[in-house]
Length: 293
Image (cartoon, rainbow, N blue to C red; front, side, top):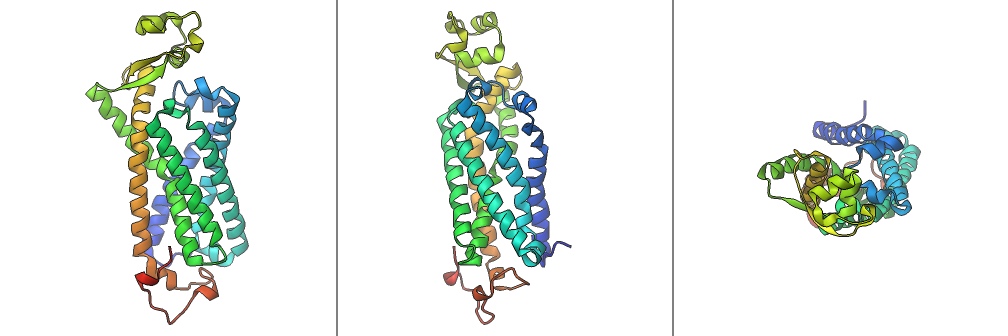
């Protein structure tokens, strides 16, 4: 029905592609402005209320979700073989959506999840990896379809890092909450934005006492625990966010390279229009030394 020749490719498509599609569909409700604000981690809109962050956050959410839904079509063999024009138009659309979405994501990384440097660096590196892979895939569209396939696989796998990171975060924030000795640095005005009560703010953090609690740049340590309300939950998310992104990135990088190398010989098998005629040599035997990136 979808054109896969190997069972393992079909299974991987339904498992991995289904996870990406399901995640994007499940997050589609975030495209509603009111729900977006309610479902974002507590405290984030202290900064996302500013135009530069709010606009980029909205663009990031919209384009990432739409791009994530459309990108699965690129890996359906029947579309690549029988609807080449659709494959190309959808491919260019996905590249554009994901690149712009990641650039906007990089901008909000300065304040996302507290703007801690471990999370910032993970977002920036991941965005660079995805954009580079997508551009390399675009560059090789008409030059080398084997290299094109590899780079587009990499870009989609890098894009999916957030799914694995979410799973890691769910486990990690529970673990650190049970350990009970982790803290996250918050500005007093960020804490006030979550608590909504100046008296509660001063009671929990006396050093945050000021005439204008909504604009206080003093930093305080907030206990990270999912058992301590919205503030504790948000602090726990901040603590584990960078770690989860880095671990997920390493996992995805390793797995996609393993898959690419294990399926290298498939690059020399022409099924329909999967490969351009000029890239196909029926007499050529696969050799790792001759493989493209």
